[in-house]
Length: 384
Ligand SMILES: Cc1cc2nc3c(=O)[nH]c(=O)nc-3n(C[C@H](O)[C@H](O)[C@H](O)COP(=O)(O)OP(=O)(O)OC[C@H]3O[C@@H](n4cnc5c(N)ncnc54)[C@H](O)[C@@H]3O)c2cc1C
Image (tube, rainbow, N blue to C red; front, side, top):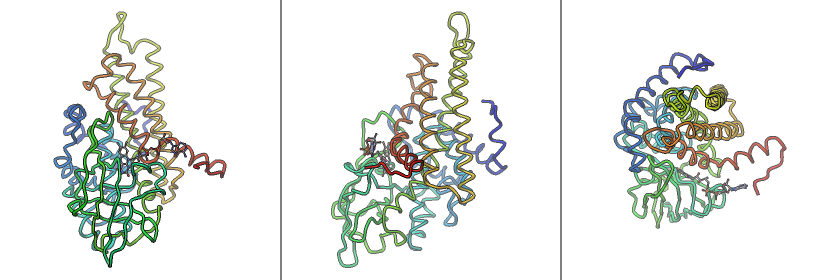
């Protein structure tokens, strides 16, 4: 579709190359199959991960250890193009890079970094991030998963819920209470006492693996703890990284819905005219484009702030809140333009629409990000 506002003129040559490379990958390797993956509730992670790794997309904005070390805007552009394919694909890359690799890279020991990061960057090892629990979602401060010292070892007990990549992961970064406060643990999923059953019957993010994690007296060596952080700021800093990817990613999902709606509107004839020739349809399309472009501008601005080292969590909340809501509105409008065809997986729209319901909820719900902005505006925290 025509980039009416020429927004991508603001990308540099490397960023445009990343855009084109990822867009071609999605067109060739993902779009022909993703409707079936969604219907069958599978995500071929072992097949896709090495390909994503060879393109440098796993932990792409991290330096060293086989990571591509790009700027943040490039990471955002990649997320946008991946999510134009499917939010499940972008989720896989976000979780691997921002939620599993990032804490090891930022807070890990040299030994942990050497052991995991090169293999994760190559897509040979898959990671997951365990923060949410069955009874503690928006408020992780109440988490009950506990790691207790036993000599120099740790014994981990508890459970996590809604964990992306859980059942397919080789390593889990697990956040647990300890006598010293919340700490992160690098847990190989082959450790006795660890189990990760998959969650079924999802109607959203079906082309993505979501699991529970159970820890039953999981014995870990002292070296499993992330040495560089104590307290909730550890997991929250990872979420800031991943939310930045969402700010960009949903622009891709919204664009894909708009493109499908424009194509459909040009060819579907009712009352002897293409439905795109009716003013009501054009009004919908025009506002959908306004939404895609405004969300794209927000993403670009936050990308530039991040590259300048100035991006604050409350600014990421702004982007996550406004862009996901815009994308969901666009997907719903596109759905109406496709009429009955809008509900089938022959077209990408209902898949994106259902996926975006998860994206609205995970990585901080829209209500939580609203409260972050409310606090930023008033100085009055209203979380409890
Ligand atoms: C597909 C999927 C994948 C996920 N992947 C991961 C993952 O990889 N790792 C991980 O750790 N977690 C993951 N999550 C969990 C996700 O982050 C949580 O679902 C989310 O934080 C919300 O928690 P909850 O579902 O327990 O809802 P709750 O916190 O119970 O919220 C329910 C409702 O109450 C609202 N609410 C809560 N508190 C307030 C308040 N103070 N004021 C107003 N409203 C409030 C919420 O906004 C929401 O509307 C995933 C979730 C999904 C659906």
